[in-house]
Amino acid sequence: WPRMVFVLFTCFVGTVCTVLERVLLWFVRMRRFRHDPRIEHEPGVVVILGYYRSGTTHLHNLMACDPRFVTPRWHQCLAGQGFWIGWSVVRFLLVPFLGSTRPQDGVGFGPDWPAEDDFALATWGLCSPIPGRLVFPSGWEDWQRWHDLENLTDKEKLRWRSLTAMLVWKLTRGRNRHRRVLLKTPSHTSRVAEIERLCRGNVRFVHLVRPPRAVIDSNVRMHEALSSHLLEDAPDVQTLRDRIVEEYAATEDKCTRELEAIEQSRVTRIRYQDLRADGPGTLETVYTRLGLGWDERTNTEVRDYLSSLGAYSSDREPMDLGEVTDHERELCQEMTLRYGLDEPTVEARPVEPAEREPAKVRRGAMVAVATMAACWGLWLLFVWVYKSMITNNTRAVPLVWVFGAAIGLCARWASGRGTRGLGILCAALTVFMVVTVLFPVSVINWNWAAEHGTRAWLYHNWKNAYYGLQGSSSIVMIVLGSITAYKHASADGPRPPGM
Image (cartoon, rainbow, N blue to C red; front, side):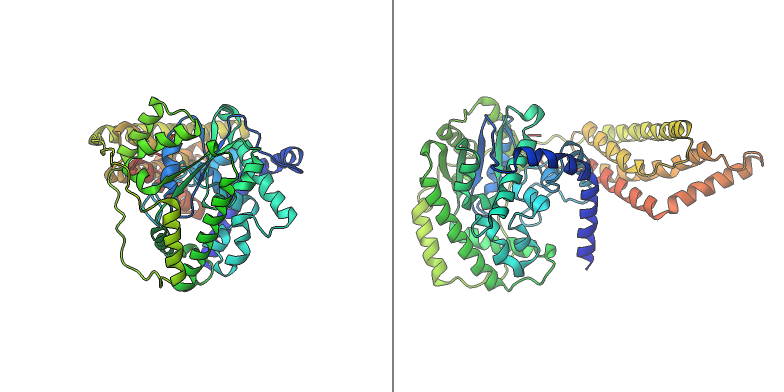
């Protein structure tokens, strides 16, 4: 029930942030994407294929380093119904609630990181298998229809087509009009023919494969790590493993058949072990095969991103992964032979982690204090202008969230990299700012006991400031503001690729 309350709360916030654009864009959808929706984007689309836990996120991040691509980000996919304004607001609101890494594997995560477009379709139109995988496991089979788009009604398939086409349309507005679209969703692996139809053939596919036993084991671990998102009891581990094996086999079989029917100059397949051994070299091979044009700038961006990651460990704690059946053994053997996964890996050419300069903490702290002082003054100016123009009183406490973000961002920018100490300082400065600013705000608005002497004037205006701090909404805003300041100023990991 607490999870349900939180889900309903976030749904309400997301609706408020995007409701205007959702209403306005409904007319666009009815006019352009109602009857026979197509993706009409001249630069074209590149789709990364590969079942869950095949390494597609790593490949997605590497290709997102290329500035010639535009790809969905998490602040867009967690509010798929939004657009420029709604996405900007959601991007800001997500900072206190999202961790810096994914819970299942420690890969970078956050509002600006590349995301799976299936999440946008799930939040926008419930045309995704995600609810059956991560929320209601008892409905796995029913929701799985959206995984391969089979057994859907005509109306349901039209909904998937129209929302997918419209998502790409939204991503390619403005300055992104001349950039290729990069999409990555594991379920696309079983949608090749449908995507080919939707893009009118103006699409290229990169199929990433990994040793099947590792894929299956990793999927079981992922579901265990994400079980906190479920709103029902999780299935037992053997049931889960058997589901994964069947879906994995069907997905790869369907992908192989449908890729064979496509012009092979628009299709390439790579192995995960090669991508790990030589990321830039393997990526250059992908670009060459698909005619995407590998250049020095892309090579530099990819290497800079890889060097910022540091060492990655695949070691995991032991856990019950279920029994390996004879059917699974046969499947793994067949898939290993099909994709040549037992052949030698390419020569390893790792990108060495970059030497990290020490954080300029003193400089960051000085900038944080200066930013706090500037925000303090802006707060008073806002209250004074508001009262003068609207002749109404406001403490404007929600500003603490915006100004907390500004303090944290400026501190990290000045220090070069975030630190925990700098984050704590920025959170403390955020609280100090709101506590001290409410006294002059009280004077501007009410100026209590001005005619009863200095002592009474101080007492009553401080008392009013104290009451302002006690409100439940004020406490929530102060907490969110301080958390946001801390997370920005303490962020010490790699920056999102392509940002």
